[in-house]
Length: 316
Image (cartoon, rainbow, N blue to C red; front, side, top):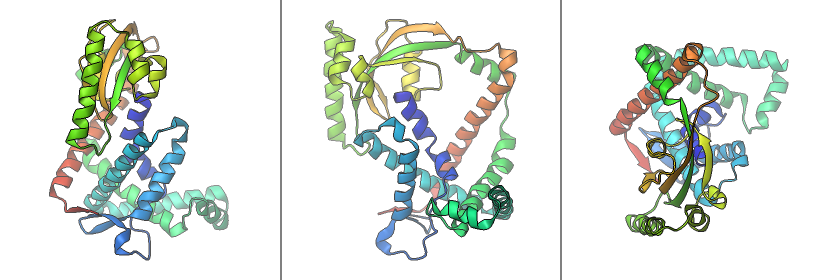
């Protein structure tokens, strides 16, 4: 579950760019409908709610509990703020965005045969053709900036490829005990959870069963299986969790590890070669594509930090 949630939260921004709902399309807006203002541009509650609904439907199979849903909602709002910042910063590419939006709609119309059928399909998502067009303009404007200003500056060396390949050679099988910290937890609440997991840690040191303590105490669904997460490779878990798991021997138990989910104690139960890994030369193009996306995300993350530092963001 942990790796699925990690992937989910890291992909929220991409999902929001892809789904056909965005800020600023409502014609009649009351002041109380605004949840955030980003450099003078409003993000509306109805648009936030629509994004939450669409994302929940997309990931309904994960069976998120209330705490996980609350965390997702926070991530979605932050992603909407990020998208608005990126769109504002990318506006020199808006002409390209408009042209590509027109091309995409022409392709859609050709696919559906006529405009009436296409509009009927959009209506299922509570969208008009104009709203869809505006959505695409935003998407392709941001893409235009990325393609012109970010991607050409990304360099991939042979050392990058070798290092990335080496990281994928092993898989670990691990179990964990999670004591969840709420996204909006106070310092006092966080301290209580830390005290709880320190108590669990002391029980482990005194010889109590990791699996039984996981069943009794873990806030992760894997607790029912004694905390077992199965085998996973690098890039599947959040970074602090991955770092701890891949730096222990078989049978090793970690110190307390803090992640966005809360506090963990991790036990490595097995280590094996990644049997699905192809020879490096055969996998070279795939490795380059993976590294490209990693570096792209890093560049966007760095840019967004600068944009946020200089932005006027008012939350309600």
